[in-house]
Length: 257
Ligand code: 13P
Image (cartoon, rainbow, N blue to C red; front, side, top):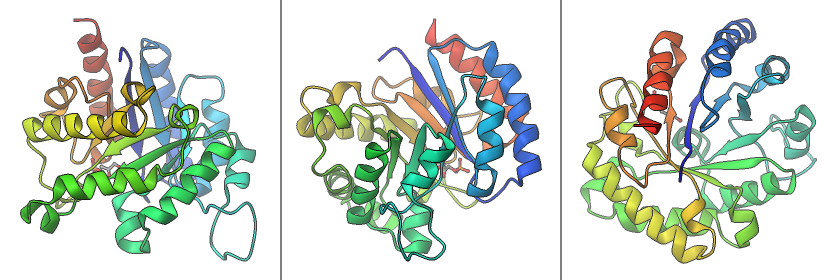
């Protein structure tokens, strides 16, 4: 795979005004980047309309952090794929571990959301990852295989071509997360690639497999060095434009070395 995907989930951090100013800065950098870097941002729902306007004359892709699977209905507090599609989003993040942890999302729900996103022409960015108990019990591979199989259940090869996967071990994410060892990440990604190819023999090798969880300036090059790591999904380090710029420029160099 010749492209590198890199993007950031803003989680619940930026106001509309903060998001607009961040995006204006990122656009300056993005315009000079090689098109082999697929760059995306995932603002909070309230900022999507304004940020969409900001990115519309740039190559920055934009996504939402979550959505419901139904087009419409009595689901107070939810947002439908039809509504997100109206904004003109490129992608939608589904099944982030914080959604699984705080909103009880499960793989079956995520599968319905994946199908709904595809129906509306948005690329699902499906997040999977084992927690620390599962890792310590030696069942990481079983857990990850099950997450992949259920989240992607029923997709055709053509649909699967639109999917992005992010492996984000729960124990590596956020302030209290412990950055994963690059060798471990490489091994897990190779395993995941095997499962994806088993599920989708024709297109499995082309499905981008991103890594996320405490990606920072010390470790990002080690992660991307592995052939089955096709991108980085970054939280805190990308919220600061200075550090995110370093990552983008170094990734560009890495692509052509
Ligand atoms: P951090 O990079 O802050 O650990 O967050 C990663 C993440 O959750 C991306 O979705």
